[in-house]
Structures are given as structure tokens and as C-alpha cells.
Length: 103
Image (cartoon, rainbow, N blue to C red; front, side, top):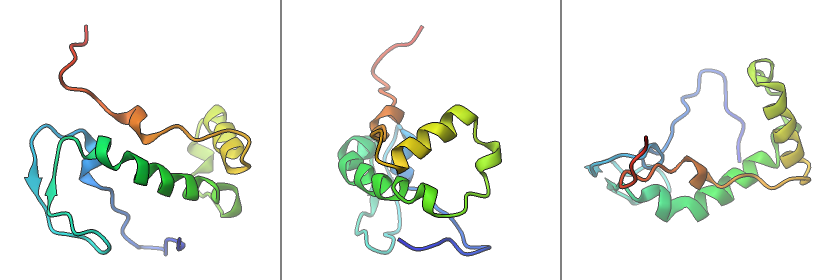
């Protein structure tokens, strides 16, 4: 892991966004994927959970400039996770199944 420098761009994997239709993409460093698929979140969750767990473990070791805008109960949860006193939730909690109907 590396610190994010001032002005450095932060990106996100489109596979996380519960897309409906697949689309082509350019591969990024360390990834050879050239197509984003609707089930990427399901397929990549174990690896993404591993990466997130490593980041959570460092949460209380680096300055958090946005901490003042995090709700106190969420900040408390993040600190518990960082200290190893609670497990992080899986990224699968963000998955939306388009085949289910919601009232």
C-alpha cells in the first residue's frame, strides 16, 4: 500500500457499480481485464475483500482528513475494524441483484 499524494487521482473499479450491461475497458496496471461484466462484484469479492481488509487495518495509522464528516457511529466501527476488534463487512453488501423485485 502507498499513501495518496495531494492531487493524485483516486479511481474505482466499474465492476463495483452493479452495472447491467457489460462493456469494454482498457486494462489497468496489474489487471488484464478488458471487459467489465455485471457479475464482476460477485466474482471479484474475495480479492476486493482482501484488499479492503488490508486498507481497514491501517485506518487508524494514517491521518484521516475526512474523519469530521464521517458519522460518529461509522467512525467508531472503522476504528474497531482497524484494531482487529470487529470484522469488516464484505463488499458483497453493496451487491444489487437486478433479478429481484423491490416494492
